[in-house]
Length: 259
Image 1 (cartoon, rainbow, N blue to C red):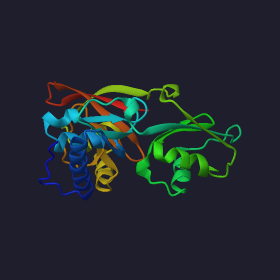
Image 2 (cartoon, rainbow, N blue to C red; image 1 turned 180 degrees about the horizontal axis):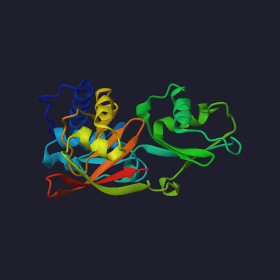
Image 3 (tube, rainbow, N blue to C red; image 1 turned 30 degrees about the vertical axis):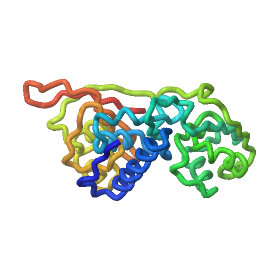
Image 4 (cartoon, rainbow, N blue to C red; image 1 turned 90 degrees about the vertical axis):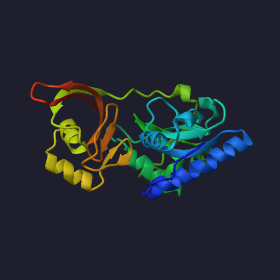
């Protein structure tokens, strides 16, 4: 696998690319798959698209436990690998909190990080009534089972490892709508997608609260069809389609908003 190290200024990206070089070399030498920790899927795809040659992308495989997982593991292999080859597991938690009391994603993640667990070893945390699914590296599951004794103030916790086929996760709810914009700049698309003023969007972007395909971006970045944009505190949208120009030379687009 060949990766380009030219013009990489971001330290996280450079670190990841160097790791990819090492992993791909090992994978080919030992003829076995090598797996990363969990990363944002959109960021992974962006890194692969920007730094890996087209002919070698077939060595890369992704999985996060279920189709819509936002955090996924990258497997690098000289042959095709299957979902069951990925070293990750699903843990189902049931927490008796009482009626009307709901634990949040932050509660579960905080409890896990409080055990000294690295964020990169944890995939998606999916909240469900009176509990959650936690996707994690298989090496961490037994540790979580033994040490996760409370979440917030609640200590009545049931835990069990379940196969991914038993996950009951509803697909994300998506609202689709059409609009027109003056340009495809990031701040313009964010304003259209979230109903915000351009000034507010600029401040959010400058505060590094806006990411396109998992990468912190600038106002001037042009958004392409299929790009995902997340705004911390506001949610996530996708530029689904660019349909051409109106008579007044505005760009007709379709946006999908995750609700």
